[in-house]
Picture 1: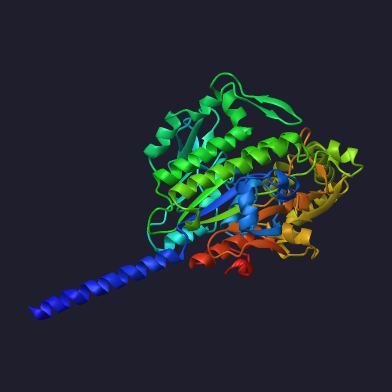
Picture 2 (picture 1 turned 45 degrees about the vertical axis):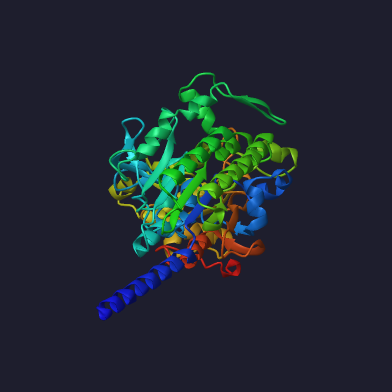
Length: 518
């Protein structure tokens, strides 16, 4: 009898010790990793509008590790590539995400970074859905799940499909984006056969319809009123205003509550990408009152979201990251006022020169099948039919492109494949982004501040105004302060993996930012 009692006592002591050890191990890591991306948010928005920040950005700037010289070390600087890099640490050469879209030579069609005709859209129209299948590498969320350390949940969301899907990775429990035709947050059958009940309930509340007729005064830009009736016009208008960010923040809060993110014995991942800033920036430019206004309103929205997370999870249990996918060029008209170089050119001016040169040298034919940004995809079948040397055809095309006014550099597929490029930072960014199966036949760089856009402005170059981005990390185990050294967005994923004691994502090319680790 005494032996049985002693055995039971020892058993419970050991169980208690194991449970205590498990709890200590769980307490070692954050309960929630929150990635906040602000689409088209230049680093200098943090400094130019600093005095107006009183909410979430203020908190991050004063309590986080702030990198003043974080850059995108890839090209083109577009949404899909930036979001793919955030939690994978991979450049396009490794990730396979070479643009927002590109020409797929196997299917002979233009594809997007997340298009997938094998899945269906859920919650929207009866069209093809989207998935991370074109992403060739793992993400932080994937590595957390494969580590098997608790029932990790990974959720991604944005107004854009690519911005929701790519940071969350292959094993995500869900990725959600906004459908401007229905006003719903939608997903695809890649993740589940039907939308979760909490998403259906959120959509039924029709919070987006409450913005009908709403207006806000934008200092220096007048009134910004929404359409008076619910429908696609209203939903597009909400998307292109700070109301879109408000709606996404409300959806994020609901996800945290419903999915119990950060409220279990595991580390969860939530990625939230605010897309509305990008729409405003494309139309108005970085020097506009509208961009200043939405930046300040984003600060307030993040402040409110942090307060909500404090009440649900406790911010001490959350590791917060703020970054962006790219910057943006100033409006050419504004540059002209400042006596700065820059201007606009049409794509036809560039690509017609290539077509004309190839026809003159090799005869008639459809020499270009498609383009992605300033990268043309030549007709390989036509080259084979004419029994031509593909490298020579590319050289002729490159010489023609190089003669177009405002073209700075032209790289051929063959040069990039063999690594025969100059060793400066710009060329290294182009080389890191070359994927032999998915990239075009040429990569063409225009001079700084020149854009292929008839109205508004755009991004995509390897120059600093497009590549210099915010990077702030805040949470337990992070040394707050301002860090001046040059770092890359690719450094984020291996740093987080080190903090969480999981394998570094498979395609990561960055270093661990050990200077911020306590």
